[in-house]
Length: 229
Image 1 (tube, rainbow, N blue to C red):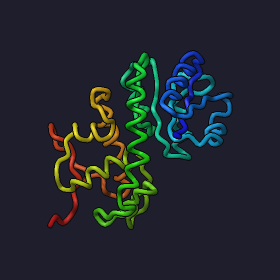
Image 2: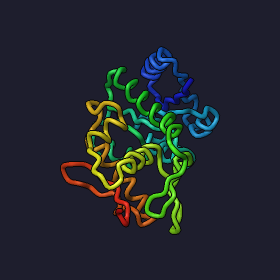
Image 3: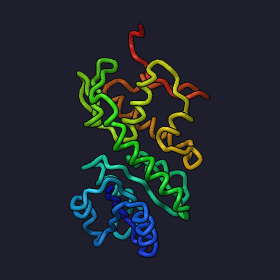
């Protein structure tokens, strides 16, 4: 049974989401003390986290930063705020998705199922290690290592890289990436994919590999392997 932590101070909404999650056989937890969010996160060890932006004491962005400092657990933001910068900020901080309130529960469940299926199933189907441009990619540890150093990727970033490498030196369409990542593109902003790819590139830049992920305008993205044969 997957454990889902809901960092939400609206008790009416929390109980409504908790009830729906339990109907789908998920184990749902809330925060008892918003001064001890990280302690409760550590104790619960959730498989996925839902975070509201507006919270007591510190906002959801703060807790996302804190969680990302310790874990790559999937994170979905829930917010009534509709400014584009909120979505961009959440993705830059390492969130996997953003759901605007009010939302239909079926949409939220679909997003949760897609992320859990991707994060906890795909690694079992892949070889643990892969070599790309003299760098070693560890799908189990979510790391990319080269002679320059090592970077750690989020689940979304690793999954994007995995899909691109499966079609190395070929264009992978944006629609294909969105469908693979989020299951149903009707529920996803096109900007969400752009932010995730840009974040992946920024991390790969630390290993001088960012330029090996090319944007093909109007088509999609391509992972370039040096010395094409």
